[in-house]
Image (cartoon, rainbow, N blue to C red):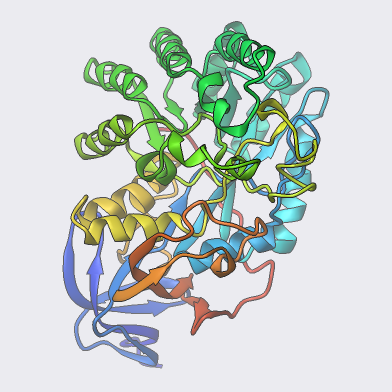
Length: 463
């Protein structure tokens, strides 16, 4: 067998990484990138003329087959979520193994593994959500981290999920010893509870009032407190879904003095505002998420934070709930904002929206790759296997047609939610072919691998 002949060659495309753009062929052998050059020969060839070839997206914030503290199961299975991800150009997700109070953490993680092994169509990893930091669960964490679950998600708000500062310090101490990343939903719980109670007392119960119930100051206060804990423990922390200019400013200042704090935002904070929640009846519930959508001035600050490098990841925070009695409207058609499940779908549209913004000149394509693939992979030590196009990396590749214009619609999306908050938005560019480890997962508008094709990825937080 000639070593110069590859299993597959992606020919004539414009290859885009976080640092470089060049016309090149990509040779794939045994699921990995074996060569990048010109004139490569393969047993199979995909012609990428006129296409951009990007590394598959790495979405490090996805809620899949996860039940809320109120007992509402979200709309996606691992099969539906990862199929949707693939159609959008994402080839790796980090989802959550979500512990609720009283649950054994090791059993929770094992249960999520069983579900993902049966359903996932792309590669995956897990953050462990810890809500019970008792001795039993703390004793289990070192082994779970060493088994490849290298990140711990904590909540600074929500009654059944909140972890107090003392517990955060204990978990930071453990994470520091084991080389794990701490990831945090940072909002001040008391401010949200106080504001919510007064809004409901005043009869302000419609979905749009959720934005007022989560004061922007609640995010800033919690981020400031988290920075102090991070600085005290010298433990790296990632702040999930930053939504306000004030929160971002605190992160930027901390990073400039050497604090190891990282931060992500999401397309909905970059492209939507609280005005999108102001809809008749319960329609606005589709745009409810936590933290809530903010102002146009926050959008501008977040884009500047991406440009400056103070925000390092764009994730989806995919939290899918159907707009019916199984999801958002479980408490009925007159439910208050406090009774409506928070979260929006976004796993399929994340890469599309960011690719469109790059073509519009808001960021470069290289920066888009960095924010949606390379740095997410680096943060959890999946790079260079994931998140880049380089010899030795997995052949997770997406062929984008930059000429295709599409108006997003609810019926186009492949997840289980039944709607997209970006319906009616026209975008430029489309992911036509999506490969995971050299195998076409999406091609010609259809999937070509069975549920369970995805593989578990071991992560760590060692930076």
